[in-house]
Structures are given as C-alpha cells and as structure tokens.
Image 1 (tube, rainbow over the protein chains, first blue to last red):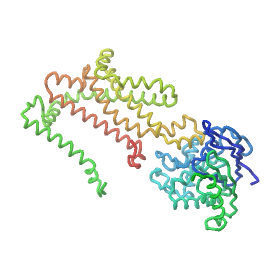
Image 2: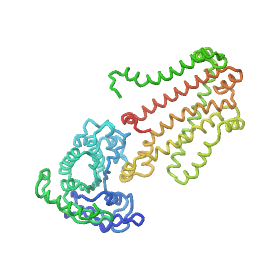
Image 3: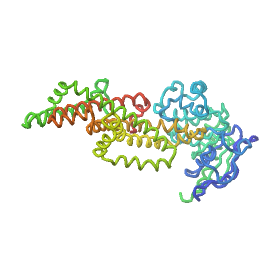
Image 4: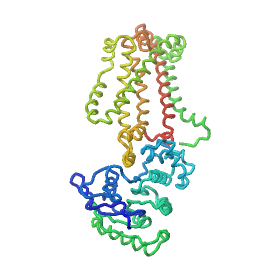
Length: 250
Length: 263
C-alpha cells in the first residue's frame, strides 16, 4: 500500500449529542479493495455520507490524494438499494451521473452503450427497471456508478437486498470485474464472507459509537477465493469473534 | 385474476361488472317510473331523458360548449397556478407555512355563497367561471403535487447529491418525475370537480351554459330537461376523465409496468 488515496484521520461525528463515529482512522490505497465490516446501525452509512458531502464531520480530517476533501467529491457512490429511477429506461439510468456532470444525453448514451455487454445487460437498454431482476438491477446500478469515472467507488451494502444465490453470483461477477479494472473501492457490508471474498483489507467496526476494532489483511490470492480454504475460514472465524465479542447483549 | 386468452375477453372482464351495475340501476329506475304511477313530469324515465337529449340536442350542444370552454380554461389556469405554487413552496419552506393556511381557508368557503358574489363582482362573462373552476380545482392539484414531491425516494435524492447535482437539478431529475403519479391522481379527481364548478358558476348567473340551462329547465318545471342536461354534463365529465387516463398512459409508460401499485 505505497500509494494512499483515501486517508481518514480520527473522524468523529455525533448527532445531537449521540456519538456515532469515534475516532475512525483508515486508509485505502490505489487499486485496493477495502471493506468496512460492522453491525447494522453502527454508523457505516454515516461514514459514506461524510465522504459524499451529505454531512460534515465534527472532528478529524479526510484527505484524498493528499488534499483535504472539499467541494467536488472524487467518489462514485452506489447506494444500498439500487435507487434506479423507475421512470427512466436502463440506459438513461446508467447515464444519470454523466448527465448531472453536464454531458448531453446523446454523448452520455454513446459512452455507456458499449459497457452493457460487460455488465450482462445487453438487450435491456430500453427496458424499465421494474422489468429487470434484482441482480440485473444491481448490475445496472453498478454500471451507473462506474461510468461516472470517479477515482474511487463507494459501495454501500450493494448486494444486501438480493437472495443468497444471486448475491454469491454477483460477488463472483464483481470479483472478475474488479480484476480487470482495478477500481479503488471501499465497501460497506455486514456480511463477513462477502468482505473476505472481495477485499484486500477489512476494517472491523464496533457497535455505536463506531470505532475500529481491528484491521484484517486477506492474504489469499483472489484466484483461490472461490474455494473453501482453511485460511479464509480462519480469517472469517477471527473476524466473527472480533465482532461478536463486542456485543455482550446478544 | 384468471388468465384470459383473448384481449376481447379481457376487455369484457374489466368492463363487464361496471356495465352490469349501471344497467341494473337504469333498469330499476325505468321500471319504477313505469309502474309507480308517478307523473313523468315529476320523475321522467331514463328512456324519456334520452329521448329529450336527442330532441333538444341542438340547444344542449349550444349550451355544453361554453361549459366545456369554462371548464378547460379554468382548469388550465388552475393547473398552471398549482404547478408554479407547488414549486415555490417546495423550494421555500417559509412560503409554504405562509400560504397553506390561505389555501385551506379558500376551501372552506361554501360554493353556494361565493358563486353569486363572484358573478356579482365580475359579471356574466367567462371570468367568474374560470375563477370558480380554479377555486375548486387548485387546492387538490397543489396538494397532489406537493405530496408527489415529498414521495421522492430519499436514496435517489442522496444519490443525485453524491453526483454533485444542485437542488434545482435534483428537483428536475427526481422530485418532478416522482410527482407524476400523484399529479395524475389529482388530475382525475380535479377534472370532475372542474365540470361541477363550471356548471355551478353558470347556475349563479350566465348568458349560456349547461348550468343556466338546468336553472331554466327547473324553473319551467321540466325535470326531464334538467336530467337531459345532467346526462350531457356526465358524458362530458367521463370524456375528460378518459382523456386524463389516456394522457397518463402516454406520459408514464413505466407506470403501467409496475402494476398500478401507487396512486
């Protein structure tokens, strides 16, 4: 991790006296896939809202490529639910970010159209979101995210709403996509297996107020991740222990 | 919902129940008028009402046109005003708190009281009709639009904000389209109010129109002509109602796909 892109330093945030984030420090390097793993309601999504400019932090510093984050944000954000606009066809949903950036509709379509095959959406350009399956909708949402061509992806539990089989298929697909594109990505999830499967590094978060319990490095090469190995099982168990030891009430 | 193979059968399945219930009411009325012994000048049978429509179609058409004109003009004004005000109060919250009470109070004024006054102030021309139609339709349209904006998916708004969209852009790309189903629901209700409003305004004073036609027929003790005019106005309302449905289909092709889950 020689080249740090995102650098969070002692981030604190509270809402009306209720501490949500407690001195969060984490780094994401160029081309690295990092996951934040924690119980629901721990403030994982709040962290993303700090990054995308929805809310300001109460303490600490966010740097991107060495500069304090201000104004234009370098992130392409993929929300938990796909947030596709039901009134726009899939191709027009995919071009949304480009249109917001000021591209003309035709130019945006030309840029997005060639990517449909790679995202398994060829032939569905003119469909409406309600005509697509959950997995396809999620791929369309990811397509909408990556075409914005921002330096870094923020993925907020992107597969949380999918059934188990579709989720596994989507994780594998994302893995192959990542292997080709080497996006820099930060993933929020509460699925330990998903985090271990996709990430280079994992930060385990405590329940609210969220602080970083531990950082895990996943040493397994990506090509071996699909298989059940003793090493991935060991890391999964270790992460689960770390997370569960924090929740005496459950 | 049983699976019906042919479109004609499906059409029958969807319109059949309505046809049967309407037919039953008409049949009961016709039977009652024939056997109750009540004079046809007091309770005309449906067949007589239809016959009167045919006989007086010239006069009825002549009076229906001003009513239609007042309805459409008044409704157009009201729509434009509702659109402008809904956007204004969506962008400036204090304005909502200032204006909403005024709009609500405007709805508490009884039409019977205000209609003659507006005619008194603005004469027998088109202006008072437009005003009354606008008065009865503005508020439902405003509420429908405001509610529609509020119904916008928070995730979509957050997504647009993360893309760097301005408030105006978020409104145009998310809030406005989100309001469409609500807009059309409001439109369907308001268009029926609009016809009633126009007729009421004419009733309070007009040179021509279905309202004044109904008033004259009543004063001449001709309930059959009153009902003939009612039949014409009902047809007019249904045609306008059907038109809004057609416009909705064209404007929101995606909405049909969702199976009409929302309003």
